[in-house]
Structures are given as structure tokens and as C-alpha cells.
Amino acid sequence: MNSTIFALASAPGRAGVAVVRLSGPDAGSMAGALGGPLPPPRQAVLRRLTREGAEIDHALLLWFAAPHSFTGEDVAEFHVHGGRAVREALFSALLALGARPAEPGEFSRRAVENGKLDLTQAEAIADLVDAETPAQLRQALRQHDGVLADLYEGWRAALIVALGRAEAAIDFSDDGVGDAEFSAARGAAQKISEEIQEHMDDAGRGESLREGLRLTILGPPNAGKSSLINALARRDVAIVSDTPGTTRDVVEARLNLGGYLLQVADTAGVRQTRDAIEAEGVRRALSHAAGGMTLLLLDGSLADPRAGLPADLPQPDLVVWNKSDLGGAREGISISLKTGEGLFMLQQLLQQKVQQRLENRGDAPLLTRPRHRHALNQALAHLLHGQNATADQPELLAEDLRLAMRAIGRITGRVDVEELLDFVFRDFCIGK
Image (cartoon, rainbow, N blue to C red; front, side, top):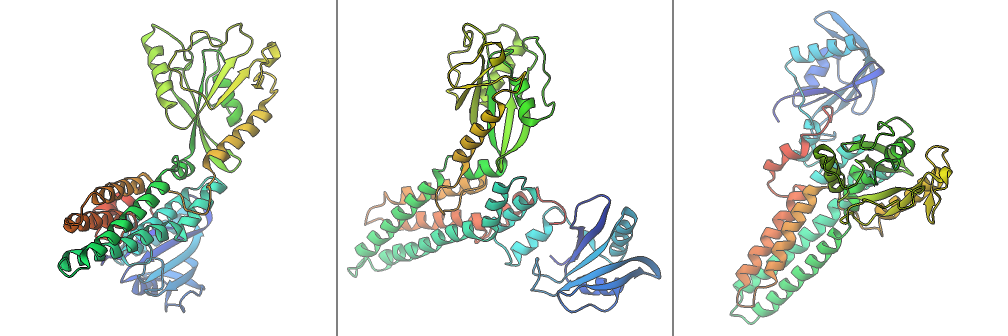
């Protein structure tokens, strides 16, 4: 925290403008050494950047004095021309002045450590950078606005009150008020545990929305699975061949379907086989289908399209009949991957099913990360355990309330969570 760091805050590569961010105790003196007197805060001024008489660039310089900056420290931004030579010259100058390159996520980490953001808001920044669809953008913006933190902090605040009552039950057990305080504390624990359970019973919608909902295409060999994923992706994702068993592994493509991210997987043809490699492909196909949605693609031109399918094939979310051009039309969704017939209708139906699966039912924020779910599971376990305490065991209830409060606090960072910071910020881009 005592060092001054810098990083490219815009995309790498050749561009019209590159933004280089500088943060730390010496940001002001370094910016002044390169561009002259600091401008008024939050005002962009055109300056000639130089180092030891050598010109670097004509650039815009912005100044953000602590604590009114993203990191809570003194921050300077240089908006320079986006050529590689300009960027490298500025980086060299900053290194010579004593700054060091930032680690991934270090700007956001400093913002958390200086109280400018909580951990859920910092994670939302990473989600905003990675957002590929409007639905992902909406969820990230809501989380960045603090709706998820408000929910968790509300539970933590309620647990603090409940813990106070449990402690009162211990301190005033002989004064006639201990039983009432204990009952109130246990009632609060029950109410909060019910709310946490309801929040977690979301079928993983928030996580699927952020990471992309998985759609696994299953079906027997030569049903047209590889052709279907190519048609949905509108590019050659998988190899198409008349030879049965061409696809041996899981092949994936990412699609924006109606504003939602869908990860579509082409899998090996599902059938009984003695070939060890093909059998492994079938095993991987069924394993991949264990999460998300499944689409069963069948050759409608065959007399028995389901012949040879294993008995443990999971119940599909959608059954599609291919080869309608060969007389393979059946009741339900029939398509022809050769002529394109029915593909638009299939895409519309898929979009509806994805939207139904991922849309938020109500105004409550969605749980977005496995880290949050793990902490809430811990909190819920402590609360349920605490509810088993009896009136003559207020110490047990108090300890469980304290542990539940700490588990929830680890989500937002309202407790000592130094061990979490490396994990949270390891996948951030450098300039954040």
C-alpha cells in the first residue's frame, strides 16, 4: 500500500487513445515531474509530457486527490496516443521515477482496502469488464450499485442485534429477562435462516447468468448434433462427417441468445459401444449433461430413432427431430439442418426456455458466485445448529450467531478477510 503503481487501464494493442492510471502516495509528484503543475481535480488539461528533456507525448492529464478517487489514494491519469512506442516511453519514465507495474486487480483491491468498495462491488467490476450480453451487464450493474451487499449487510446487522440479545440472555439469566432475550435471539436466527435458504434456492440462476447457461446437445451418432451447433453458432465449430463416432470429445461454442449467454456443447453420439475411446466420449457427454439444459436431437427419418440410446439418458429439456426434408417430421419441433427449415423456430423456442430459466423472479438480487454460496452455506449451517440450543444454553446460540455473522461478513469483506483478497482479485485485468 506504500508503493505507487501504474497500469494501462484501456485495452492493449494499437489504438487512438491509451489510458495509463497511476495510484499511490507519490502519484502527484510523479505526474508533476512528467507534465508540470497538477491541474485542478477532475479537470482534463493538455500537457506536454517529458522526461529528462526527452518528449514522450502531448497528452491529457487528470488529477484525483485522495480520498476522492477510485482507489481512495492520489490518482493521476494520462490519456496518451495509443501507439506502442508512446506507451512504452511513458512506462519507462514511470519506472525511472520509482513507480512499479500494478498486479492484476490491484487498483480494485486498494479501493476495497480503503473502504471505497466492498468485495461484492469489486467482483461486479470484473463482471462488468467481462460482460458479453445485456443480461450479464444488467446483473453486474445491480451488484455494483450495492443491491447484493445491502442484502447481506442487512442480514449481518440483524445477526448483530440477535447476538446482543443472546449475550443479554447470558448476562441477565438470573434477572427474569434471560428467557425472553433468548427466545427473541433464536427467533431472529430462524427468520434469517429462512431468508438465506430462500435466497439460495434459485436453481443457480445468478451464477448461470454470469458464466453462461450450459446447453448440452445429446443424441445418437449421425443425428446431426455437430451440424446443429454449427448452425446455431453460424460458423464451423465442430467437424461434420457421415462417419459415425466422428465427435469423440465435448466441443463448445458461446452464443448470445436473446441477450443471454449460452454455452452450447456438441457431444459424442450416445449409444452402446465396445470401443474404449468412443465409450469415454459417451461418458463425457452424459457427465456434461448433468448441469444446465439438455437438447435431445433425433433422426426423424429412422423407423426407431431412439434405438440404442442408454437407459440412463437424462430427461431432456427439449426434443428436436432432424431431417424433416427426408420425411422425418414428427410431433413437436422438426427441423432440417440441410435446408434450414425450422431453425428459426428452434432458436425462438430456445430463447424462451433460456429466458424462463435465467430471468429474475422478483426484485431480490441473485446469488452470483460460488464463493458467496459457500459462505452462505456456512452461515446457514451455524444458524440451524444454533436453533437447537435450549434456554439454558444461550452460550451455544451466541457462538453460532457469531460464526454465522462472520461467514456473511466474509462475502462483503466486513471482517478481517486478508486471506480472501488474493483469491478474489487473481483473475482481474491489470488496469483494474
